[in-house]
Image (cartoon, rainbow, N blue to C red; front, top):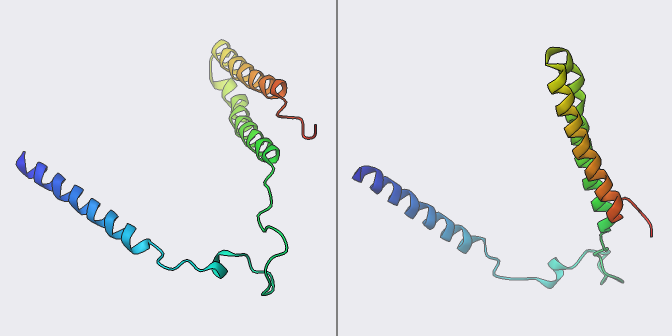
Length: 117
């Protein structure tokens, strides 16, 4: 029992020492203004190098990924149909499609699918 306690304490102490050393070593001591600015042929940039990111585009991309994964889950359902009980398969498929349709309606109702206003 004491051996497990001692091994656990040694593990925790070594972990803390490694984390403290990593945080001390990884700190930058010199912050250079030129290294932090974008490179534009040796001149100061005329405008901000950081372009605003379209959150609408990001939202559409996330919705696409979600529905893409759900389609990947729907495709094997046709193969499983012949190996399972038709009633349980129908109920599971309908529930899955109902959840999909409710999510689609919610996104449509919130206006997330409208690209331009």
